[in-house]
Length: 355
Image 1 (spheres, rainbow, N blue to C red):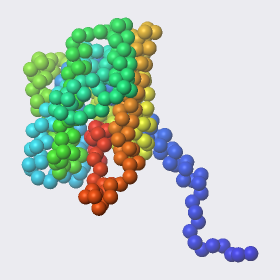
Image 2 (cartoon, one colour):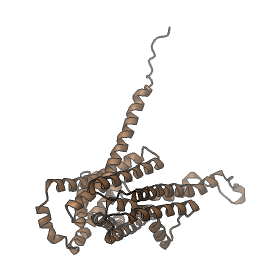
Image 3 (cartoon, rainbow, N blue to C red):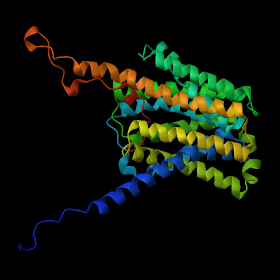
């Protein structure tokens, strides 16, 4: 019989698979809690402290303080890059966050979640104005019709319908698209040399001042004393939770995106939408009629349908080019290398998360 081997023993499958699966489960649960909590805690914060612009400014200040805890992560190539980013993106970033919080004040959670599914429509309109190419197929058009029908059905039975809320949601989607286009321009077309924490620091640090100015213009400043003077422990807890949650969702989102496929990530995100709507029904007595439930389900599933249809439409030309025979070099052509492939439009629309 041969003696024991002196080489390293291979790891047992059970010992390696269990921690990996546990890590995945923990990452999914953490992201779902942070993602759903973002909408829920923002809504709770603005209900107990009806100063939406002031809340946004506090959240931005909290983010700045968190980033400064790790100063080594704040790097940039040149002051010109800092100016290019700081003079453009933060203003759009403030508009996006401020309009979102105002929508929280005037609209139900269900209305916000459902109506945001029509975001592809203003996205296409704005991208068309800036001559950004977009994909439009029979499947994407069908998905948009499903979304619009679902939103209309939900809003028909919405108990808390508000014109101000709908306008705020539309403004929010417009700012979100413009901010995404500007970020794409500065990160892909004419890239700046800034670390992700530096981008976040500029967005929140530079944006905090105009946000406070908007709060003063909106008449929130005279209410600061009475509002914060009567702030109870529950309202303070919701405010702090909204601040912490804003930082957590960036970390958990990045962690999960590195572990699962894009389709899986999208499914988890849409499951969260149902969780937020359910919380609104149970906590705030929002619309829960059969028509409203069918409408919100159609709008959310239509969003999943649209994302998948657009991904297939974008991937199809790449598959056809890969299956086509290479052009002979003798005819003046050159076979395209992997390094020369264009960026996927879907990848350029990925949310900006810190490293």
